[in-house]
Image (cartoon, rainbow, N blue to C red; front, side):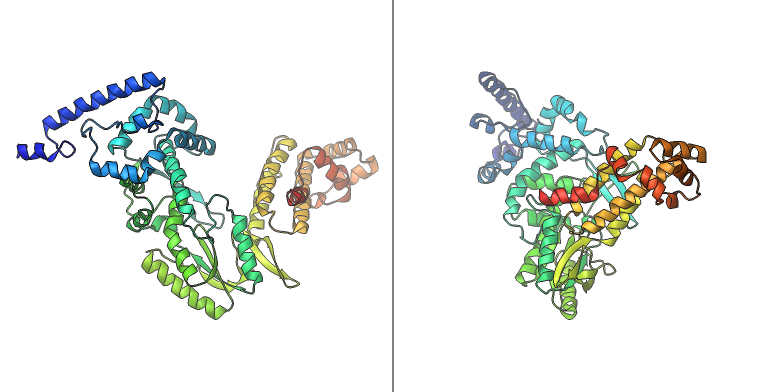
Length: 498
């Protein structure tokens, strides 16, 4: 039996002699690599190497033969995907992206700021583990985030090292799949945005397709079938090393209260690779809808199909439900999925309305409610600290908010929001003055005549007093403008002209 194993070749032998021979060859190659790098004046790095001379050198584990198998060499030459992922340029870009995104630490507690020092010390270990096939992604850290409409959303936070590797993979695979993805898909794709999706939906409604099949996938990211996902990835990714690492990511498990739980399905939200994988699995839905000739818009797991009649919408809903559940093994949320008139459907925070035959976009009612809720928190009457600090926090929120909702051409709504914010600030100021004598003195300081200041010093309702003429005169629009308060309406106008 020993003779048979030796004849079978070094790449598959597990005998002691073969291992010893592999170690000797590995050491010889490492010696050659060091001499090569010394001649070129280069230091070892995490990437696969930029020169043709170093590409063939493997940093394999001691238990593995130093000679790669012919099949493995063939895959490398055919695809080069594995090598491209670990090039210095790609890893540098991925590292910068991970550092820029920051985010919470994974189960090991390492933050994005600690990534560079860690790589300087451990990059060769990581490289060798990847090359030998021994690298195992860590379980993700389970975190629950409250949804604005109630309930919680579960996300999985990978370790910083796993985020780096996922980002590097995503950067190489994204251009490959971008050529294949549907033009009706907008979520998490370069050069596409939620605004583009809303504009496309607006166009379909304007064409007369005023009924919407609004499909809601129940716990989509938790229900993705791993085998179906990997089969679809393998359509474009031929390098088995890449496939193996992606599969390991999906099977890495989740850590809940210190206990590791296995994951037989699902692709946890929170990792850089998750958005691409979600688009890959749902691309089959896109292709099926295109084959049927439907007008639709999909943003991640939000999919709206536009039809002319309610009856047609019912038929489409049933057939698409069957496709999703039978072909993709996903579950449609029957309670939240519906067929509705276009003006009653909320899509990505926007809704539609008709005026003089034209379909227009506005901010969805619930999103306006969230705006008011947030501003109430920032302008509590009992809040301490400088008014300037409160205004700074308000600016950060409102500038970001209008940056997204500028698509809604509703300047009158933004003007009302400006007035409401100023009234909240007046209320907060008036409440802080506490006593009537203090209010009187402060109003006089602000230029209010003494006889008029007496009127503003009384009262029991801060909200009612914030709307009174005397308080509006003392704490005028110009007063808050001088303190740095930014106008939502003016910022909207600036963005429209940009």
